[in-house]
Length: 359
Image 1 (tube, one colour):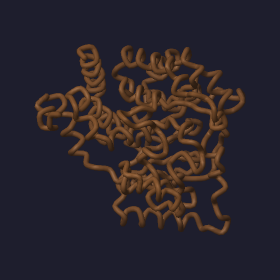
Image 2 (tube, rainbow, N blue to C red):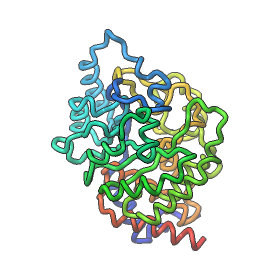
Image 3 (spheres, rainbow, N blue to C red):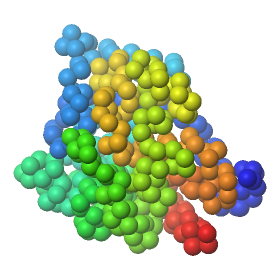
Image 4 (cartoon, rainbow, N blue to C red):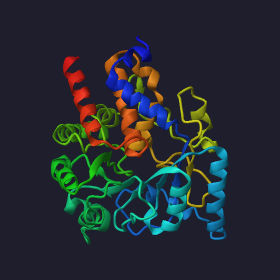
């Protein structure tokens, strides 16, 4: 096993590593900005587990929100992932987060987040398939949400499409990606699973999806916010000697009593992380669940963290270190923490492809 300094004698790897170090380490939390949403998407974890019902009617939410800002700044938080229900419905709160923290936001794309006042905000715009599939899964076929989102974020440098692919819809990937790229946007993949389908082997079902995504990386290297390695880790649920699940998930709330055994099992975790509910006070088990089986979780952010925190496991060779470093860099790139030169994405994909062929 060589040392990091040996691997960083490669100028390209050193450039990536230096940019990450300059951006600094992240002390992050996840926040539900509101419990309201203007959609009810099939299989949405937020409503499947009743996270919208956590709010106590007696809670002064405006006071609680401002107290949250103060408390997290005092605690040293410097990065916030803004999620559920639908953040674009509370632009006032979103602006305060933007002005106080490094952050990103996930939106369903139905209401455009304005450019003015949010100029450098990374925006993940949801799409769940082609126009028909997306509409069927999210509004029972009543509206073409994909078309609305494309119009709202055409040529918007802040926005990338957060494409949640169903295992039986791999044939739609090429068309959806092409439309996003032609719209002037980049693409990050997420993976759909039905929270009620407990006996489905999604890791096996996503084989065709993985193949199609790899094709998109080859075809649109400047626009793909994933790597072949990251794609494989998520869809197989395998990282060296670990299998994906609650016991290895690194983004679990450290102040949540139900996580005590997980925090004591010896596997690494993010020491600062908390997943806050929309009351701005209480936390839950993790970003995407309270009681759901982690076997149904293919969340990209969780898997980014799983790889990133396991740096030491990737030191066995230059190729392995490159897989870890490019995953780390991709996360920083998506969230606007390093430069936004699209050419560097092409170089990352080319470098990993060359290494794959040579091994």
